Image 1 (cartoon, rainbow, N blue to C red):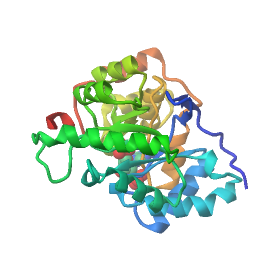
Image 2: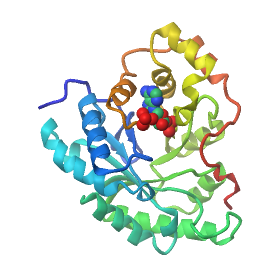
Image 3: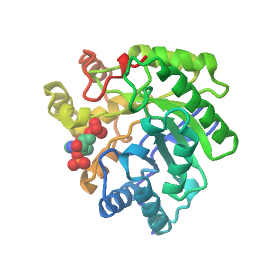
Image 4: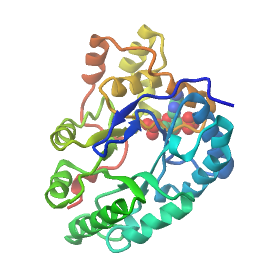
Length: 291
Ligand code: A2P
């Protein structure tokens, strides 16, 4: 069976590879059946990217689900883009082992994109001066696995502008992606500029503000005007700026809804109205205290 939905568009990474603008966020998506159902609905709806992490505890379930489902859609491993992330407990000297563990959990020969999940180290205080050395050591480990072809692209998540500049000074391989919280209330202007300056793809997580932005009166009003849902408006606001999104849902109906964002355009005034909601508000964790 092949997918009737069209496949999500892509953006180029600095590795020369294309990354889908839409992927399934898998934070809190747990249990073999739940993962299988979500991956099935996603592939049918045109998703070709899946965003897991060591700390999500679902790498093995994602690997198994894809092995079972790809043939159903006439697809192979090369047709999907898999992201995973190094857990903060493997930051530093455990990085190579952590990344290889992700690979074996997924049951794959390579991961399309592997990110350092967090600038800090589990068990160290955010002010601990060993944090910079540990994440630098992780980066070297990721560079080596990248050179071996095991990690096709490498990047970081939850880095601040200061963490990004520090990495740019020491890295041999530039990060391909920075993945951070991004929605109208937290537009990350400085980080987006840093990414532009260094040729790093800026990727959004928590576009729906963990679901809380779906009832924001301005978002609801824009949605009513353009006859779309609040989730579609929030996701469209990002992709219309060229920012890839990773909405999480375990519900097949909502997974389909979140994929229907490439067949409409928000007017300039609606884009401005949404962007004016900026107030530096985060729904997720704040890495700014990590030295
Ligand atoms: P569920 O998995 O039950 O669909 P974010 O990506 O910002 O972290 O938001 C994810 C949250 O939003 C999850 O709780 C998810 O719940 C919910 N969600 C995802 N898509 C939709 C949608 N289209 N409509 C309503 N809620 C959604």
